[in-house]
Image 1 (tube, rainbow, N blue to C red):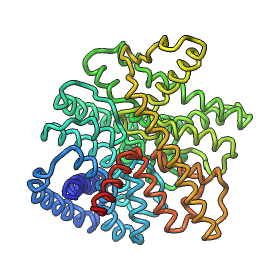
Image 2 (cartoon, rainbow, N blue to C red; image 1 turned 90 degrees about the vertical axis):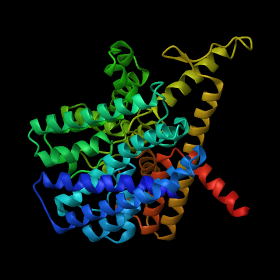
Image 3 (cartoon, rainbow, N blue to C red; image 1 turned 60 degrees about the vertical axis):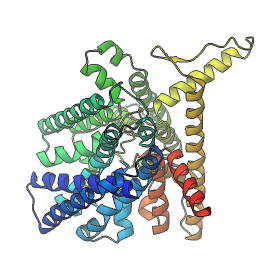
Length: 468
């Protein structure tokens, strides 16, 4: 609890401070911004006070459970003042902040009716949740000499990019600052106001999906839409690609399988959407590419009302959201790397069905052999992810039936897949969902962010402790 609280306090204070700075660029100022600064200062004060007792309880198992606590607690710390600022009931405010911190993008607000400060909090929650938690956890792993493998995996990442984790953190901080500044610059050059450029960059780079207007990216012109979706693409790439570029390994970076898979996936799903729509004009082509990229990167931006899409189109987007973005990125889903390895595994099994036993070639990626243990872990993650998605969809279906709210099965599965992958594209369910359904969706966002296994581990150890 101490570590979970410490992580939540630091990221919550970062979110509140970033939102104030962002709102000032509008320019905009109100009394709530002063309250946010004071509250952030209080959070930092408490964090300093509890860091010593937290350190004394540090173990890898503690850190995994602390991250589960963090993902439930951090949105609550910001949701309490946010409910006051936005005039929302606390459950709705918590849903909004869970959506923000997990980089999902579901919303219960009309952004066009909110102040620049409210929209700044929403955008900052996505940047802080996706990036701040990752960097903070890696730094903790270095300071306390802990192997970061399990911790990084719990955050939905999974690739140890350099032998020196200290050097990795410095490099990642530098890269992410550059990746934040560059999109702000080119979005501003496309004609956006500085405030809008910052808000869209925070949301897009974190593959979040929050926008400062009700129409979102539909209100932007073509080049601005392209700038936003390209920023989502940058955020959804495996950060080891940027590290390779940082050290001049251009061929290794461009040859990364997830880079090729992401580009291929976007165009593959776009072609499927065009075939489903049976329309091949310029607008449908751009819409197909945009929404395919939005689903693959799990960013959730849209230029059309996705809820009005045909069932076939929703199935295409659902599959794209479930597979998701790259490992070690701000994107969600089961990850392209796992899909790539499992695809290679299927091909290997097909080719080896007629071959003598023991003569099956190992699976290698970028010259590195994927061990049997790694394959088993990937299969476990994918299996638990899919089963969890179906169980949550079943629970929501039953809750909707109790409330006598009629929603089709594909819309329920679409919404749950969007929640667990951290996408935020909506079939329309969120807007009509009762409070208990929204809380289940909020839990789905967190469970998906943790990739299920760390959540089950924390739950199992909690029951074991209660039993004792």
